[in-house]
Length: 206
Length: 206
Image (cartoon, rainbow over all chains, first blue to last red; front, side, top):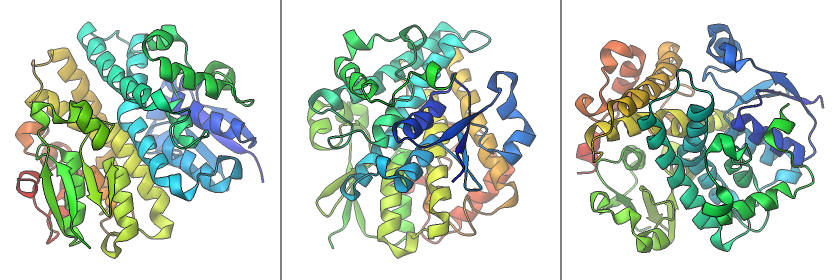
């Protein structure tokens, strides 16, 4: 089997989710840098040949280009024993990956983006609005983790990896203090970072 | 089999997705009204006993309460022949449901909410920001539908039903003119509305 190719850029936590899954499972992969900041994903040619949704990550392997981090994670969990999800936990893993896409990553990532990378700098009202949405997602995950070590069941699954896509970026980018304000989430991050395959996003995708 | 119970409220397009799937498939269900505007989903008791994510829809049946519209739709597609997804189309259906949750419904629904229901009325900068995000999602779906009748394959699937959750609310609520600005999406809506089981959201969840 040739190595997977991961089309990505280092500021993309959705790309980091896939890289983290591959690395934790010991699956070979190589990076294909996408020049997002120069508009690569908005080019009609890139959309036609790589991803019509205009997004990374794209995971290329076995002649197929797969997109949407959640779909990629669930595919990898089907294909690789190290990431396999028990049948009894499939529905719950899917539910949390959907929640991540709908309410957690969607807001946390957007808030970071607006704080750090958006040009022109957004209006304060927009920052305040997105911060409150991100905080609502953080509250729900922090509460969920108050009496459990992982999102589903008793070990790391792709549900954890999906929700962890953005939390390991620097606190100065995210604009939240997890240790003080979301202690259960902070402890869960420590468990994930304790995995021998773990690297922080800017190391992983450097 | 007793009928499913759908915990919902009529302004919730995520609830409408599930109701539309049930009705198109001819599956019996009954409505359990959730008093969202009086804060029902924010009550600790409701979160503990119905859905910790604080959201509708919740589909109750066979002793299980299922949440996240995307997970519910995929479950119904596994259980009921009328909604069955071909094996060869599973990955693509999942990918579009994730896109819907991440970039389409997430933005279109939020923009409508801010326009119609948010108190206090949001700052214009927030409305402009969310409108541009909603438009980006509409562009991608409209483009995808430019040379096909349905989102995946040649017939209606739960991917269409997911993406259709909010588009059938009144244009005055949504703030977009689909017929003029997103004609392929508008034609696809016509195909969905031609299904004998179709009802508009405020009729379906009245």
